[in-house]
Image 1 (cartoon, rainbow, N blue to C red):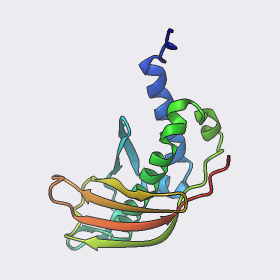
Image 2 (tube, rainbow, N blue to C red):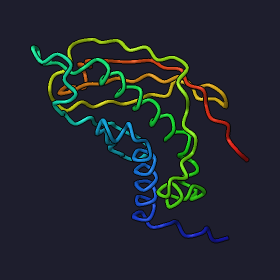
Image 3 (spheres, rainbow, N blue to C red):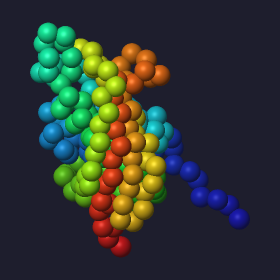
Length: 169
C-alpha cells in the first residue's frame, strides 16, 4: 500500500511562517513593543529589538521593568499558543489565510505572572524563550527566561499560569 506523498518542505515552512506572522501581528501591543519571533521548527525565540522608548532609567541606562515584564508575558502567551496550535498548523486544519484576515484563535488568559528581575536589562536587543511546563484543557503553566548577550546569563525570568481558551469541536 502506497503512502501519500508528503508536502514539499517549502509549503510546510510557508504555512508555519504565515501562521506565526498572523498570530504575532494580530495583537497590537506586540507590534507596539516591536517584538518579533524567530522560528526554528517548533521552537520559538522572541526578540525585542532595542529602542530608546524602552529605557526606564536613563541614568544607568536600563530597560524599563514594565517593558521587560510585558516582553516575558508576550513570549509566554505566544509560546503557549504556538504549542497549542502546532498540530492544527501541521495538519493544514488551521488556514493561515484565515489568520491573516484577523480570524485569530482565542489566546490564553493570564491568571498570574511572576517576574524575577535578575539584573538590569542593558540598552540592547533582548531574547526570550518559553518552556511550557504543563498544558491541559483548562490550565497551563509556563516558564520564560530572557537574556541579552549570553543565554547562560538571563537578566529576567518569569513563571505564569494561564487559563486555556475553550476549544471548539
